[in-house]
Image (cartoon, rainbow, N blue to C red; front, top):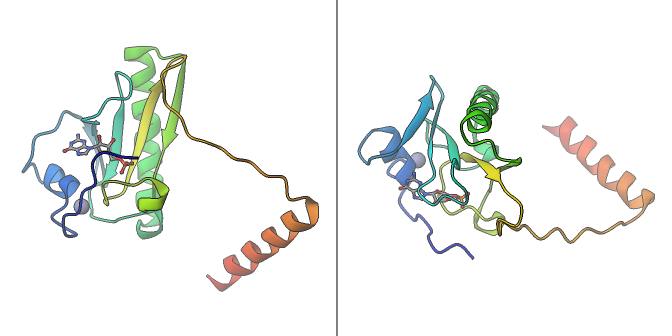
Length: 148
Ligand code: 5GP
Ligand code: ZN
């Protein structure tokens, strides 16, 4: 379980204040829509967060332009992490909602350098419900895509 959860009101959250320069950060780079800075809690050296500049809580709240910009910044940062820290692996992690593991409710993506036995864990209790169920799930999603 996370040790820290940000309960600040929207617009006054930690990352809004960080974007506004009201609290210090170790900034890596920024563009019109995104900012990348060192996570205060480094899972491994070089652990960066890429956040939207605009306050938006989850993946469902950002615009397609912000989504594209976030991944472009993440790729740029990942190349820099590879060059500067040379980790043998890298994981992108993005949490939505408390149940999804989100503790700061302002959209961000983790760029996480990975090492052998580094203690980072995400349980993955996979099930194989079979082809009929998979087809039914896909049909539900195709219908939802049409409705949206
Ligand atoms: P989440 O659990 O929401 O995906 O991740 C939130 C992250 O924000 C955590 O990894 C935490 O260490 C980081 N964090 C929380 N407060 C601050 C802060 O004030 N400055 C920075 N740079 N990172 C923070
Ligand atoms: Zn915010």
